[in-house]
Length: 143
Image (cartoon, rainbow, N blue to C red; front, side, top):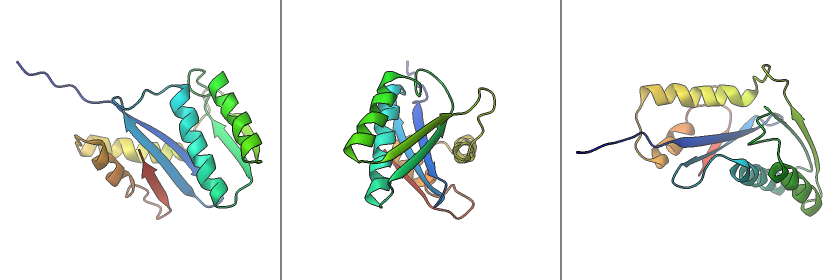
């Protein structure tokens, strides 16, 4: 007998509001989970990318799930990035129940695509996510 189950995929998005550049990090459950370590790694990757382009001041906004955003790991990341890259970081949380942000529309496009197309491998999701931003603004994805 053969059983199949949908493979969980995770999507973490950062959007730079000044340039409207979106960074979409995707992975599946065989690579990693969706906890504080993964969130911190993706945030550090986006800080490195933007810092390499000359950005020295960052303002981050997020919803407030303790397991992902409000914890020691993410706080340690902010401290590490501020000291090692000599940047200023402001981190704000949305009020519970009022957390619609720019990246929510990017996530919405990805979920809408998920209902239409059935992808079996992560690389297909990555390729598809690059074409999802209907506003003709930059959108990059990686795993």
